[in-house]
Image 1 (cartoon, one colour):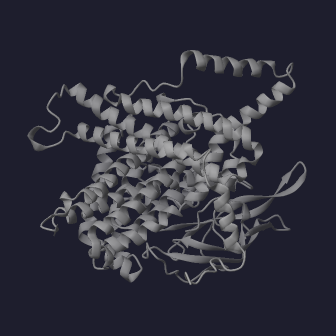
Image 2 (cartoon, rainbow, N blue to C red; image 1 turned 120 degrees about the vertical axis):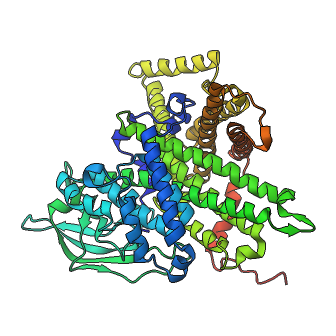
Image 3 (cartoon, rainbow, N blue to C red; image 1 turned 90 degrees about the vertical axis):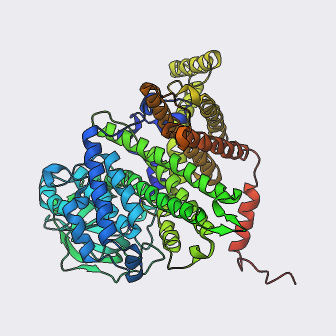
Length: 611
């Protein structure tokens, strides 16, 4: 599971290439609603939709006949027959260009495939996700022509499975702490690699290791350490450790990797000397979204299981499904699934638009998708197990396996959710913070900064005179939800301004504040995505001239059902946001910090009992 990149490092040192690109998520921190980026809700082109639907159908049919998720979990391995059966479907090359033998699917279609894998088996999803969405993606985007020709056809066919090795014993979510080194050879013929990687997903299966090491790079001030990516084939000095036994996704291969005196030529550099950080950042950006899609499929399975149990099990002389607290759990799962699905596929649409000549920065959005989806899955796994009661605790039912598997996604890939919250907040705050700093300098030096001061004042006058950011492209039946979004953006920008003025450069250390900012932004982005998606469904219904009663014939119209789910999520998210915003000024942060410090001194909890 070795792809946890330095999320905080990303936040404070994002490459210049992304700073001037449009970003819906980052614009929210300025109080700006870039609704042209999210309306209309993206849909796959008809041809790609047909291809993807056929592929997903073939995958499900193969799974029904050949994949036993319980056996994979019990035996802690994926049978070779399963991997062999998936190769003809093209799943190993789902997002590899067709020129190299892959399917060449875009982000939206790729997410749909990983969504389906998540519904089938977590171990399989993690194996293919690491291979395709991380390793093959890195090689596709950053590989040289020679590297692509050499490796991609074998990766696409599944003849070669790849690992993506970042994590080390002292470098998990902090990629800047990588200690593996690649020293240049005195004869100028490449590098000598030494070091180790831990938690390498696909380590025991890999015929290609994509890994990262510190290298010396010449700069004006002298030699400095920078991360570089390398492509290593198995061979002398590349030592694979024993398989790790894990809580969940037990069928996936997870090992350590030891590199001892391994020579690598310059032709094995991925992304150029010192370019590894960029490779990591852009690859994990896509990987987070693919694994968020896996969470969707698993959650859909859990909801189906919970509903089946609730509608067939009698307690106290009535069906479980008629009990209010059971309805609450099923409804919450459905509402959260709708929002997370909306976020994943909206973000995938932004990535597809970016790849088609309309560059968009999606770094914040993919992080939001990963946090939202993984935490939704954990809640769903807990709630579905609770609905199933004793069946949820027994290993001859799928609930406990799905609960164990769900634990992974808040850690992998791309950093833990705590680190990603820091990443979301600091990435978003960077723009307003920079503007505030420049304004401060401009006020100190009025002649030099006159234009900036006037520009800022004019913007404030404009906002006061003409109002706040307005959402205008939503369906009229979602007017209330649009107002909730507008209210939230106004409150968010006010808090952003306040915390930046209060904490200044020390905001990087204020993790309680960062967490609150991130929580507001994640819920806000999910509200926007849900409103965009539900609006598309309602506008389609209007275009059909469908004026039937919402529940005509005993069935709920699809658009009406989306409307309910959207309203349900926005209502709950708005309540959470209001509570979070209140805690910016009224909280027990200092008390909790002191209690934690108490735990660090002597015994963590020195009380054996009340006596």
